[in-house]
Image 1 (spheres, rainbow, N blue to C red):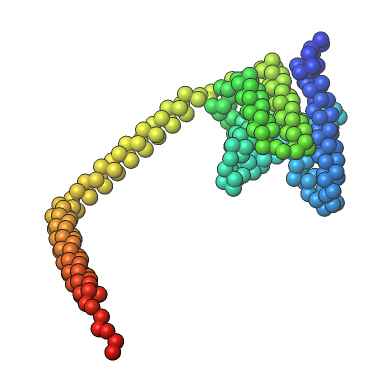
Image 2 (image 1 turned 180 degrees about the vertical axis):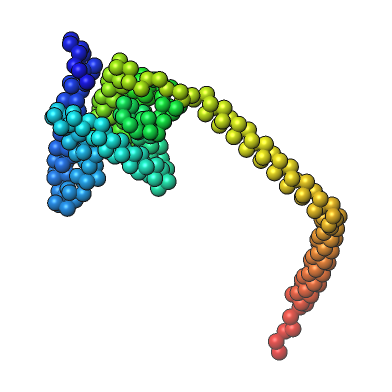
Length: 300
C-alpha cells in the first residue's frame, strides 16, 4: 500500500503497523515480567509464552516482515497464514463456550468470529483463492468496512469492561487493556487495507446477497415451525385415540372411586379404634378412682 501524504496516525498503514509492532513487544515483555514477579519457574514461563503470547509472537513476525522486501513480495502467502491462525483461534474460542459457558466466552467467540470473517473477506481479495472459491458470491461482502470495524471495536470494549469487572489483579487489568488496544489497531490495519483494495477497484464486483440468506433462514424456520405443529397435533390425536380405545377415562374414574371408598373405610376404622381406645381409657380411669377412694384397713 502506498503511503498518503499528510494523513493522520490511524489513517496511515505504515504508522499503524509500527504501533502494532511496539504494542506487541510491550505485551510480550510485560506478560513475561509479570510471570517472573509471580515467582513462576522456567517451565511455567515457557508455557505462558506458548499460551498467551503464541499469537502475539506470530503477529510480531508478521508485521516485522511487512517492513522487509520478502514480506512485501510474499504478502498474500503470509496473509493466508494469519487467516489460518485466526481460524484456529475462532475454533478454540467456540470450544471454550462448550467447556465454560459465560459472558466472557460468548464475547470472545463473537469477536474472533467477526475478526476471522473480516480477515477472510479482505486478505483473499486479489488472490486466486477469491476466484477459485467464488468468494465474490459471499453474502458477507455486503457488510461494509465501517460496519466490520465498528462492531469489532464495540465488542472489544464490552469484552474489556467485563474482563475488568472479573479481574482482581493489576497484572490482569494491564494485559486486558493492552489486548483490547491490539485488537482495535489490528482491525484498523485490516480496515485500511480494504480501503486500499476499494480504491484500486480490486474484486469490488460481488454478487452475494444477505437478503437471500434471510429468506432461506426464514423459510427453514417456518417449515420447522409447521413440522413441529404437525407433530404436536399427531401426538395429541394419538393420545386421544389411545385414551378412547382403552377406556382410560372410565378406568381412571373407577380408580378414583375405589381410592375414595378405601379412604372412607380407613377413616371409619380409625374412628372405631379411637372410640374403643377412649372407652378403655375411661374404664381404667374409673377403676383406678374406685381403688383410691376405698378406706385403708387399720393395722392390727
